Amino acid sequence: MSLTEQLLRPLLASPAKPLITHYDDALGSRVELSVATTVNWAAKTANWLVDEFDVETGDDVAVTLPAHWQTVGVLLGAWWCGAHVTTAPAGARVAFVGPDATSSEANATAVVSLDPMGRGLSTPPPGGALDYLSEARLSGDQFSPLSPAPGDTRALNESTVDEILAEARSRAAKLGISPGDRVLSTVEWSGREGILNGLLIPLAAGAHLVQVSNVDPAKLADRRAAERTTLDLP
Image 1 (cartoon, one colour):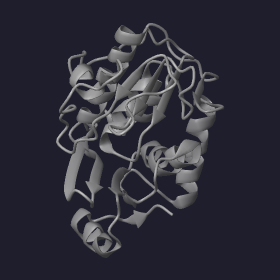
Image 2 (cartoon, helix red, strand yellow):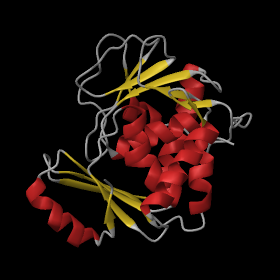
Image 3 (spheres, helix red, strand yellow):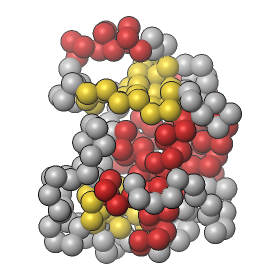
Image 4 (cartoon, helix red, strand yellow):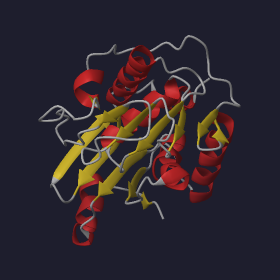
C-alpha cells in the first residue's frame, strides 16, 4: 500500500475535518484544506502523473517546492501512484518546480504557480513546461492504482515506504503528537528531513498541521491564538 494511502486512510472517517492550514506571511494569505480536499488534490495529481507522464511504481518524480498547501497535493499524489520522490531533477520522469524555475534537467517540467487562491500561471510557461494547476485540476477526483506499491518501494530519496512511515510515526510519538493536536510549524520542506519533519510527522499522527511560510515572527503568537494550536514543531 502506498505511503499516501497509509497516511490518509485513517482520516477518511472525518472528511470535513481540517487537515492543512497554510499561512504565507509575505502575502497575508490563509488557505485551509479539509481531509476531503487534500485527498481530492492528491487524486488529481496521481491521475495526471499516470495519464500525462506514464508514471509507474518506482519512477523518479522530483519535487523542488517550498512548504505550501499545493506542495501537499504534489507529494501525496506522487506517492499515491508509487513514485519515488527525489529532490534531484536530473533524469526524473517529471520535476515539479516553482514559478521562478521554469525548466529542469528532468524529462518534463511541471510548474506550480503557488498562487494562494489556487490559480494557474498567468502566462504559459516557456520551454515546453506544463502548468500543473491548470492541467491537473482537469484530472479525475478519485484514484485507483493499478497495483499497490510494495512497502520496500523507495518513497523519499533512499528511504522506502515502510521506512518513512515508521520513522514519521516514531518521531510523532516522541514529540507526543496525537490526532487531536493542532500543530504549528515553520519548518521548511527542504530535502528528506524537511519533508519528514515538517509534513509527514503531523500527517502520520493524524494531527492538523498549521504551516506558516515566509514567517513574520511578530505574528506567530497571533497564529497560535487564532488556530488554537496545541504545540509547535521544533
